[in-house]
Length: 102
Image 1 (cartoon, rainbow, N blue to C red):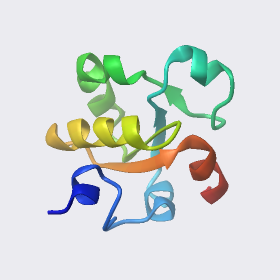
Image 2 (spheres, rainbow, N blue to C red; image 1 turned 180 degrees about the vertical axis):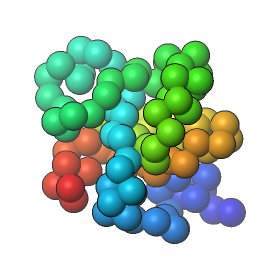
Image 3 (tube, rainbow, N blue to C red; image 1 turned 30 degrees about the vertical axis):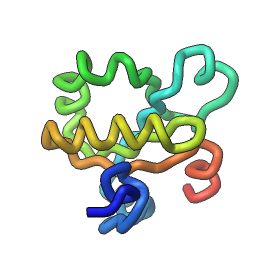
Image 4 (cartoon, one colour; image 1 turned 60 degrees about the vertical axis):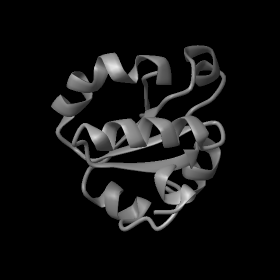
C-alpha cells in the first residue's frame, strides 16, 4: 500500500459522485473558525481534533461520509480513522476542490 493510499488520496475505489448518489454526508474537519469563513452548503463541521470522540455520532448517521478540509491532509487523517472504525468514508480533499466536483 502506497503513501497516497494510506492517506486516502490514491486509488479511490468509489468516486465522489457515487458516494453522493448513495446519500453521502459531507463532514468538514477544519476548525469552526475556518468553517465559518466558507464551506460547502449542507456540510457538517466536526473539527479533526473532535472526530475520535464523535465517532459514535458519525456512525449513527448511517450513510456514506465524505470528509474534507483545506488541502486534504486533515481529511486524510479523519478518513483513515473513520475507516478503521468501520465507517464508509471517502477523502474528498480540499473543500473548494470538492465543491467544484459536486
